[in-house]
Length: 149
Image 1 (cartoon, one colour):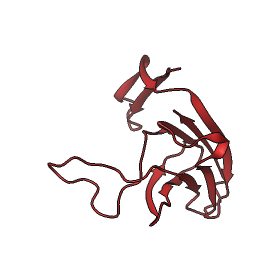
Image 2 (image 1 turned 180 degrees about the vertical axis):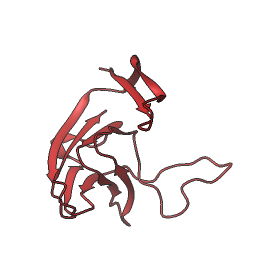
Image 3 (image 1 turned 135 degrees about the vertical axis):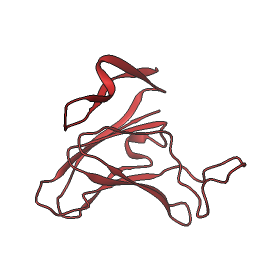
């Protein structure tokens, strides 16, 4: 069953409180391709710790079309494919800012984009991990991952 995320968002300049983008009165609808199929919340320690968020097969889930990541501290997220030579995509997720990932696939070992040619991805993501990439005494990160199909 398809769902719709209903988002209110705006970007405000902290120097003078002017609205740079968005509105708190107008809702943006983001279609979700299917049902929520997996949800987990983990604590990532404030000491360069790494925690697994999802591995193929967790909760009976083999793949996903959309991922939502929420965290209360800045983290790094790594999406991996270990089919033969490990491939990965690493991304910084900012605290308190939802991160949406489409049906990502790990790229090849060569250039991902080639101008004028069709781009294909090699191998589906089979693991998602989170790292608290600092030890600054600001506290552990609470990270939630929600997958949709």
